[in-house]
Image (cartoon, rainbow, N blue to C red; front, top):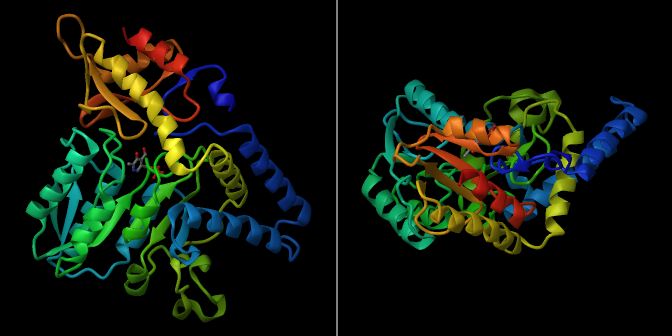
Length: 382
Ligand SMILES: Cc1ncc(COP(=O)(O)O)c(C=O)c1O
C-alpha cells in the first residue's frame, strides 16, 4: 500500500488505502478492455466475467444470493436508490437513529417532505457501554420509539461516530413482529471489511456498503443487498439500461432481481480492483479472525488513551471493532478543537479525522495498523 509508506494512517473509516495488486488489477483490466476493443463483441465476455465474479464474491461476504445484490457507486446511493422506490403512504413514519450519516439523513428528510411522511428519532448515540449493554439499549429504545405508523427504521451496523455496533438481526426480528413490518435500512459503510456482515445483511431490507473504506478497494464502487420482499414491492428509481432485463421492451421489463437498481455505464476496471482487495483480505483469515486482529490494535489504542490525562474515549469499554473516538483537553481542562488537533497531527504525518456530532477525534485501526503506529499516535497525543 503506497499510501502507508510515508505516513501513519488512521483514516480507514474514511477511505482505505489501495494495495498495489489492486491498482495493478485495475490498470490491467483497463488495458484488456482497450486491447479487446471497448465496445466490441470481444469485450463483453470479459466485462461480464469481471463484474459477475465480483457479484458472486460479494454475495458470499454478504451471505445472500447474488440476485439480491446490486452494484452502486458508494454507500449513500445504495441506501437511497431502493429507499425511494418503496411504496410509501402519506402519514407513514421513518424512524431514524441519531447516529446516521448526514447524506442518508438528508435523503430521508427530503423523502419525508415529498411523500408527507413523519420523522422520528431512535436514540442510540449515547449507548457507549459494552456491545451487549448497547444491544439491550437499542432494543429498549426501539420498543419506546415504534408507533403503529412506523414504516421504516434506519440504523447503521457500526456507528461511524462512536464506533459502537448495533444488533441488526435482533432489530430485524423485532420489526418482523410489528403489524406494519417496517423496512430496515442499514448503512454498512463502516462494517464491510471490518466486521462479519452476513447475519445483518441477510436480515435487513437494504444493507448498503462500499468498497473504498474497510475493504481497501477503489473509490467509486459499492454494493447493496436487498431483501426478497423489497424486490417484490419496490420500484426502480434512477433508471437506465442496466435496470432493464430486456432493453427493447422498455419499462415493462425491469430486472426482477436487485439489478433493477443499477443504472447505466460505469467503470468496469474498478470491479477488478475491488475483487483483488477482497481476495487480499480473505488471505488474512475469515471475517471473525480479521476482526480479532483489528480489535487487538483498537484495544491497544483505547487502553493507551485511558492513561493520557485530558483524554476521554466515547466508548467506556474497549471498542467492538476498529473505530476509536475520543476528545482531548489541555491541562486546564479546556477541550481542544478536534479539527485543530487533526491539523497538528497531520503536520507530523499522522492522519486521523475530526467529527462534528459529537465533536471528537476518530482514529481507525485496520489489519495493516502496527503496534508501533499506535504507540506513535499515543506519544504524539501525550
Ligand atoms: C456511516 C457512513 N455512511 C455513509 C458514508 C458516505 O459514504 P459514501 O461516500 O460511500 O456514500 C460514510 C462515509 O464516511 C459513513 O461513514
